[in-house]
Amino acid sequence: MASWPTNDTPVLARTLQRIKEREPTYGSKLEAELARRDAAFFERAERFLARFEKFLAAQGKPLEHGIDCHLKLRIAMKQERMDFLRSGRYASSSFAEVEQRVYANPEIMEYYMYGLVFSQFLWKEQYARLEFFCNGLPLYRTQIDSYLELGGGHAMYISSAADILQPDTHFELIDISATSIDVARAMSPNDRIQYHLCNVFDFPAERKYDFVVAGEILEHLEEPRKLLARIRDMLTPRGHAFISTPVNAPTVDHIHLFNHAREIRDMLRSEGYLIESEATRYAEDVPEAQAEKLKVAQMFAAFVRVEQAPADSA
View 1: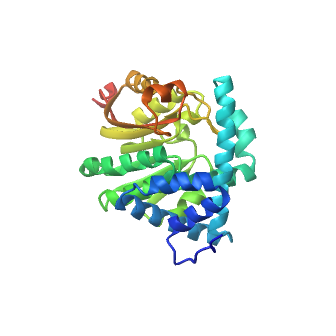
View 2 (view 1 turned 45 degrees about the horizontal axis):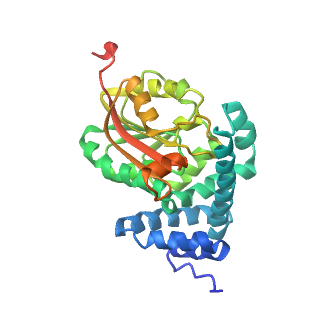
């Protein structure tokens, strides 16, 4: 077995080697996929994963720990998928269930949060969403003076937006989890971001934004329409939003099941949104008919605007 490379070796290369040591089949599959990636992918991945390695080091943990969390997450998600294919439903149907099962369990939260960092670059549908966001956001650059993101995650999207948008853009981030905000703050090198620990439904109603991001939020809610209505009310008359959510994607804290991308499109349109551009990507490279039959997980993302301004803002 090859020796573990030094810290001078690119983070992505060390990540791949660790995975190949632990799970050779998975590692070989990833290696083949990464061979097809372009320079922009490697630049994004290296920059963010290097930042994550520094974050882990500040916690007294090596990069290998984060990678092992990713492998543990992958195993857990495979089990969730098997259960989903048998039952046709997600394991949890309410926030109370998820809170007890996941959010109140520090061990699960750590491997879940850390593991997802690598998924953003190693799983094709996850990276397709980030690439779509980064390629599409510049089209709105001159229209955005204020940017709000719901759900901190690892600050990957808001950090990318801070690099893309104009220097005087005002950035804010809302999250209900103090842990998530701490991670997002630590992972973002940008001091222009204002953080709010609160529920978006408790946020001042008079605050308006030119751009709102709700990435991978709808599936965590019992009633996603309520969030879409809240976002609609938070947008300025010229405002736009970036909204993404997965199809047939069981995991430890998903509640609302979308069975097909058209269900998401229909919900957006019925809540008053016009889809200006969208992207979808299956988690596996199989024909669409087969993907639908096998309920392969799919990413859906869209840049949207409110089709008609609310009457009180006319």
